[in-house]
Image 1: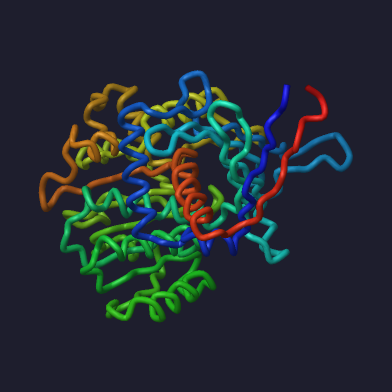
Image 2 (image 1 turned 90 degrees about the vertical axis):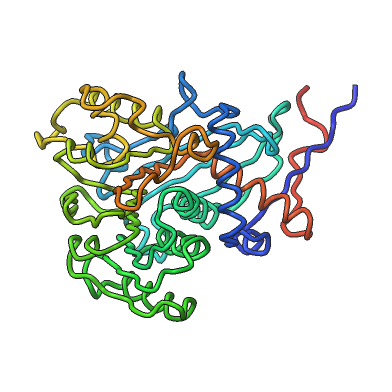
Length: 385
């Protein structure tokens, strides 16, 4: 019996750029396709209910073992995110990454990511690719795609809270779908933070139609008067500022992709609540409760993800499940998006490996078309049959 040769394509970051990983318009369309398939249940994620974000490995804050790695900063973790996506993609795979906030001192991104695409039937790899840009673009494209259903078309003021890589990619995507943006507000760790100043320069160099850029001194300043608020913060719990509904104008659309600290959950009853994957936030809340009300140092635990706030309201009977809309149902026309000029829309975008697979697949197809990447061999014939 003969065994087939297995080759796969390796795409480094330069290859991914050649393959169009930064093509905002195309990525937005891919995210629309992805959410359509999600709404049709033509997908699988990990876990017993096929809805989990991924499997995360966290390090302890203390250990008696000499040299054992410790959780000595935010996002000190490893994570594997397996998935299958059907439709025109029909691909399996996973995103995998390690994260350490101390990477910045080495001149490295906090997280270093790769995506693997695999044949659904054999499991053989089809591609292994650099995924930092891929992940950032698909994350930024999701709220922009959602904005086509949820934001007022004449939105002029955009607020970027957390002006890092994710919101830079989100900005590239927002500007594709919100042509009337003329004012951008930036909120970093301070009004003169390196990321805020770098974002200001990026806007000035790439979007001459923007007439005003405001470096905000507070979270409240960043929120007030904004038509669209894009939150993508990565901060420790100790450094988080709490949001307040009164800061948002009538008709505002608020997207949260990172940390959204809010304590008066009932305020959300006066908003339109939207989630990308309700089941994922149910699992988050279940895991949160399983860890107990306090951490190992006796500090009170609080969840800081917008979608968990919504699930909590459903589980405490403050709202019914159908009052939290699924973004996929909106994309498929099964549920309304924005229904009035004045409603405040709150949308939680937690991110799923499905998005990494779909955008990775489209970049892979483009790479094959243009001859980008390096063909590598897994085996010509397996040594053990």
